Image 1 (cartoon, rainbow, N blue to C red):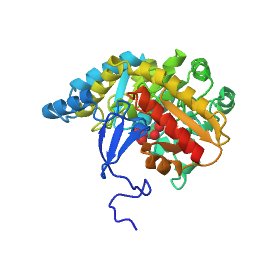
Image 2: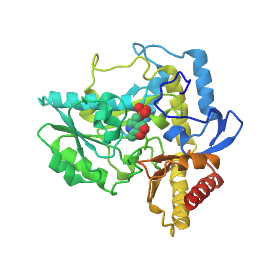
Image 3: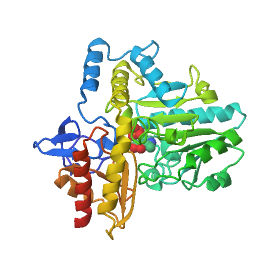
Length: 387
Ligand SMILES: Cc1ncc(COP(=O)(O)O)c(C=O)c1O
């Protein structure tokens, strides 16, 4: 039996990581790993990014925390920058992705209540992942994460992803919003048809529903736009992000536009730590770096190189069912479950992840060099050949 004081929510862990620099991490034995996962889509700038580290240190010397009863300068600056980059109008800062989605869901509920809908419903997708709080796991389209936690929060209707007709069929007079990921991350890097988000936008406009996009994994430059919806030239009513926003400090954001931006009023919502000076200073530096260093465009360029190389090298593999990717989000779906590849990759000094049972998921940092990108591809190809 484990002697650890930590609850066993992550299963057995065998590697202790103690240091990071760029795309590399070192364990307590001094072994270096190339990280093709970025702390699960968090450290897009890699580790110990100088401008972020500097911002954290400088802010820590000035003011780590004050309550949201006062104006917080880095919070204002980050809010303004996010609004500018996203085309949204207002921001609520949280501490995590799930909390950002909680804010979005509360907006949807109150939006419905204001229209006289007593039991508002939000349509979400099968194979989605929206978080582990009770409302967000109720929204999630994966039975495995819900088992044992009933009764769930009511008011969610699940439909097939990438199927506008399924939404039309599931809608009722209580429908108030659609919430989907522009690319499903945990569900296996599932990329919908090019016009899926446009179809959702049109349907929401027609019906007066809120379009709420969960960009907690796909946001912050990862897909080659700041938010993935920007590929579609649409704007959602609500978008949530977290992971890559602070490059490792815990911060989430729920951005809204139009009527949705005015729903939460004093007393409706809040957070002690959400948007505190330290995390906002870090996220501001991280977001500025993404823009200033042109890393969003770089994600798109690297994506093409990596996808082409993966597809070329694996084109004759009988073990591969599909190769998907957009920006620095890649899913290589095998014909059988392959969770064991995580440890096998680690033995080759590469960190990656397997999701949805049989999909190797790569979420590399946006700062990797061409050579590092090739090393990731070549190692994955070798792993599959040996599997
Ligand atoms: C799309 C999406 N939504 C929500 C979450 C939950 O974020 P957090 O773990 O920060 O609560 C995740 C985390 O993996 C995610 O990928």
